[in-house]
Image 1 (cartoon, rainbow, N blue to C red):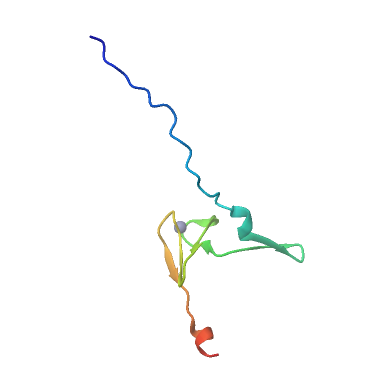
Image 2: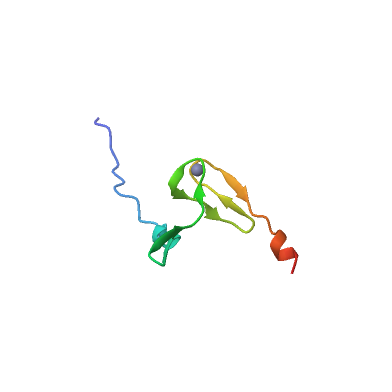
Length: 73
Ligand SMILES: [Zn+2]
């Protein structure tokens, strides 16, 4: 009896959002300004914004955002 091989084929495409890396760049006065990059991974790897911290999905570096300025309002 030959083994039955069930081919599942391609997994259904999950409706994931794109990384939107282009949104991390903005051009001001012919200068490219980048959002916070990971100090460990270097340029190209951006930190994901959370409520009170920045997080690198590659090396799991986390940087906390100080909200002292907002408190002094
Ligand atoms: Zn990193």
